[in-house]
Image 1 (spheres, one colour):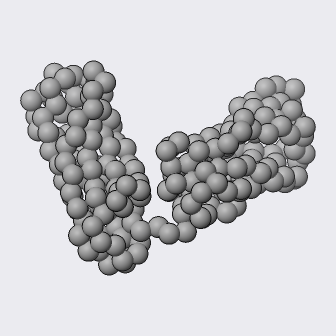
Image 2: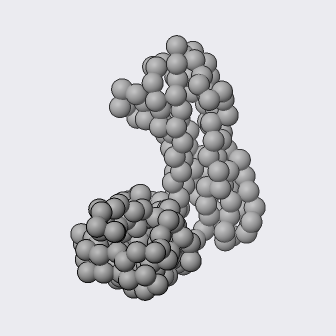
Image 3: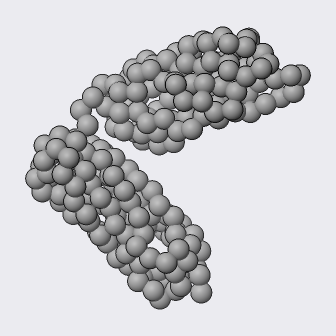
Length: 213
């Protein structure tokens, strides 16, 4: 079980069939003080892929060395990250705790975006062409997945950069895909790579870029 600060945690299972499912968040107090009046939540980092139902659960106490399992219901459409958060009391002081992100998978994974990176200086200037690269890795024999590159601009418009079919990929095979554009605004850009199997989203990866004058 992973550990952060005074709480050890795990999510079981982390691979589920697509649809509405139940899972258990295990929390263990590995610190030196009892935790009380705890509001526990499971939070989605991608609500399209993972929708967490409800508003969390209340735990009266989690004593030193004690472990408890809290049920949560999720609707899973594809791989996505979640994290647990806890607000409560420790040593008569309020605390807020968050886990690291936990990846939920479906039992029919086809492929993943293994990496997504801007191939440029960390702070490119206006007028400089920017290239982004995504590496797609097959987790099963796949044919004709579609990879799309998008960018959110500082003025909150969205640009489509490229759309490519992946062709036939065998298990473990990787292919690299690139798209380029020239930023016309100063500020922070959010870059997206989406991988689709027909209309079903298989994976989504995000990167950020700061453009200066």
